[in-house]
Length: 397
Image 1: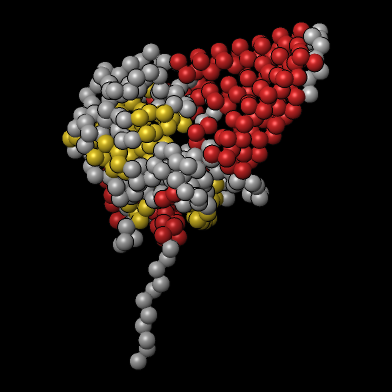
Image 2 (image 1 turned 180 degrees about the horizontal axis):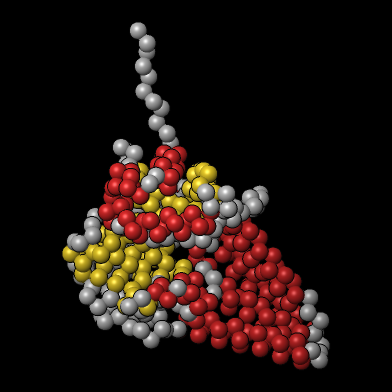
C-alpha cells in the first residue's frame, strides 16, 4: 500500500505570491472564485482597471516573487511591488499593487543607521569643540561659539535628541560644556579683527533659531471643530510634527498636521538593548478613541514590519478611521490582532481601539494620528495638552 503524505505547506509569503500570480493570470470571470472578498469590496470593473494598468507597466506577466521589499510582480517590460493576503483555503483576501514601476535597490553592506547617526553627531561635535579651543583671538572665538550654538539649535530644535541612546546624548551635551570651558583662554588672546567671521557666526545662529522657532510654532490655520482626547496614556515623544522642516507628513495635504508618537526608555525609544519589537517602549501600548464617531475603515491582519526595515504594505497598516460627522480622524500602524472595532461600528471617546504596532509604512513602533476635512489636514488639538505640537516635544497625560 502506497504511503500518502500531505502536501507540504508553503511559507506565508510564498503562498501569497502563488495566489497573486494565479489571480493576475486568471480571466475576470474567475476572480469571484479566486478572490471573492476583494472582488465584492473593490468591484470587478475597478479590479479590471487595476490589472490593466499593471499590465501596461510590466508587460506580459512572468513571475511573482517574494523579496525583502515585498512581493515583486515581474513582466517583460518592468516590475511593480505588491502586497496580498491569503485565507487558509487559498483565497486571495486582500490586495494592493503599487502604482509605479519598481527598481530594485543596490544592496550594499552599510553601517546601521543608528551607528551612522552616532558617528556623524560625535564627529561634528568634536570638530566644533576643537574649533573654539584653537581659536587665535577673541573675535574668532566668539564667531566659532555662535556657530557651535547654531549646531546645537539644529540638534535640539530639528532633531529628536530624546530618541537617541543616552551615551550619544551625554556625549553631545558634554561637548557644550567642554566648549564653554575654553572661555578661560580669552584673557590671554588678542582681540583680533575677524569681524566677518563673527558676523557670519551670529547670522547663522539667528537664522537657525528663527527657522526652528517658526517651524515649532507653525499652524496650518485649519482648526478642528473641537479638541480630541489624547489617545495614549503616560509620557510620549513627538518624532514628527510641526512645520515643514520638522514634519515629513507635510508634503501630503491630508497628513500635513499629522503626529508620529513614540515612547521613551533608557535606550532612546527602547527599554532595553536589542531591536526586536518588545524592546520598543511603544509596542503593545493601548490606543483609545480620541473622539465619538463611526468607524469608516479598520484593518487588523497586516503583519508587523521588522524594526528598521520596510516591506511593501498598505501605508497605514492596521488602522482605525473615525468619521465624527465634521472631520475624519485616522490612527495607524496598530499591532496585528489588537484592533477591537470594525467598519460601521459606533465608538465613543476613550474606548479601546487597539494597540501600538509596527505595521504599514514604518521603521519602528509608533502611533500615527491625523485629522482631515475634505482631504485637507487639520491642526491637532487635545484636551489637557497645552502649547504647540512639534517634533521633539514630550506629552504627558
